[in-house]
Length: 328
Ligand SMILES: *Cc1c(COP(=O)(O)O)cnc(C)c1O
Ligand code: SF4
Image (cartoon, rainbow, N blue to C red; front, side, top):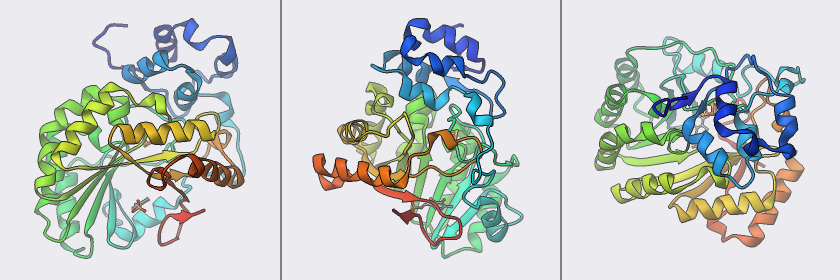
């Protein structure tokens, strides 16, 4: 693989890159039961592969991206649209299948279906995206009819996967909308594709001059944070961004009090406050990541004992039809 290639689409290329030493005998099962032809395709960025190589224990990161045969098992209750996005879209804007308004005052915009890598636990892994070329003009019209919306959340996929021009167009529409005061971006890119973040820096740096700017990073494990994420977060904070983190609670990834406490402290060290710890959305193919509510609550109790209150994330689950995320 050449240095210029920033992502792996073939599992074999990826495994060759990280090398057999990295996987080691402790994680044989991960290799033995991998799925080489997954329905939700394999994508891993080079940056994330490097984090796997550098991790003390590669397993928590590997689990997040290496397809496993167990994903093909049908488990009752694990479905294609676990959080009721499709009916919500239908209600908010049937002609705009990328706007989701579930909660008062906030609307979520699915800007693109692409991501910096494919997380195996993804709740939108089976989501039927329709690509929309002129998203910014459609969004502009929709916002004119929805003056009750004061926060726009850019989601995806990953909104920072948009080209620089597209991203700028979307941001401009939001900045020009008088009723919107806050722009929030949910992204995993600072962790998985630092190379792609660079091109958005000029746009990102100006947003706090027009809007309250909030970035919610999706980090699940302390080994996902490194010097490059730290530098990026420092830049944003100096420009006036509020930085929060949302993690998904995942079996064999972050379901110990030590890992969670370490993650929360490392986030703070990088200028990011823990926001949500999400219970897994029950998408088809992700059941093996499930952590029970009982253990989830125990984990929060444990980390509350060793962390200041402001570093303890809120444990929540998304339940379709509820007026907010539901605290557990
Ligand atoms: C989670 C979510 C939000 C944001 O909820 P917060 O509790 O404000 O973080 C907004 N819209 C949709 C559709 C969501 O799923
Ligand atoms: S970055 Fe988010 S949307 Fe993309 S694959 Fe991962 S969990 Fe899914």
